[in-house]
Length: 108
Image (cartoon, rainbow, N blue to C red; front, side):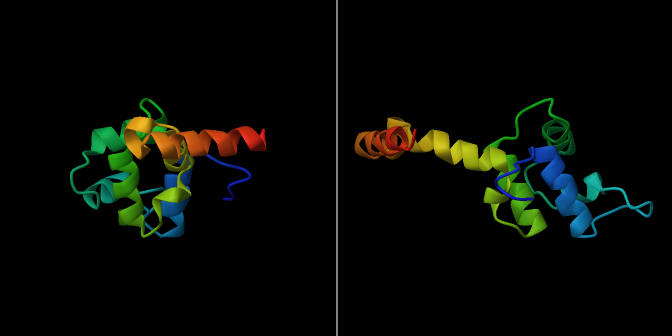
């Protein structure tokens, strides 16, 4: 899956699970197995993030990435979170936020 055709968290996690062969005997993603590999994340929170009932939190995205052996930037939502933060003076400081805004304005 490329950045030019981003997919949501649930689709990406499902794809990564299948690619990692974390599947049931029927070949379906083994969600309970994944949840057990994500300390501090309960199955129900993972399920809600995967099916889109709730936006995936940073904690869930980081835990899923660790459990699947990938960088969290594989998730579109994680990249969007970091992009939003780059404009947030409370997170990156005033100067960095203004610089990010200036760069963004020159792109558009």
